Amino acid sequence: MQAFLNITQIVLSVALILAILVQVRGGGLGGIFGQSDTVYRTRRGVEKTLFQLTIILLVLFIVIAVISVRLS
Image 1: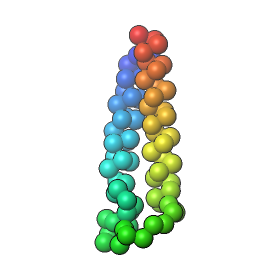
Image 2 (image 1 turned 180 degrees about the vertical axis):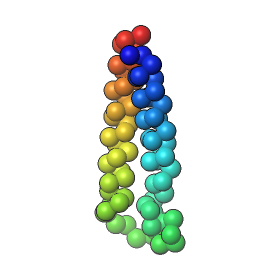
Image 3 (image 1 turned 90 degrees about the horizontal axis):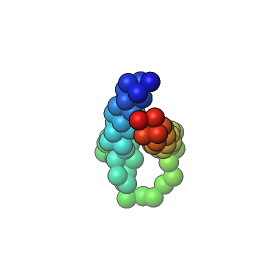
Image 4 (image 1 turned 90 degrees about the vertical axis):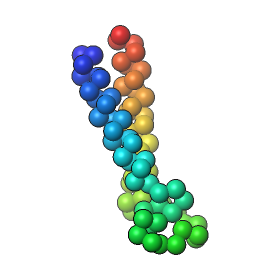
């Protein structure tokens, strides 16, 4: 069981790192492709989905970490 939790935690941490790195500070995904980031706008489409995915990955990572500590 502990090995499964460790592998799950590693996979979640890599996915979380990738999700955070894809997000460009301030400009969103449009900043990668040269879009002006001086205009304030709400998250839409892929940016919103990526933001929500990051939160879900973070919550799952914390839950798995707490379960792993409790079982060890």
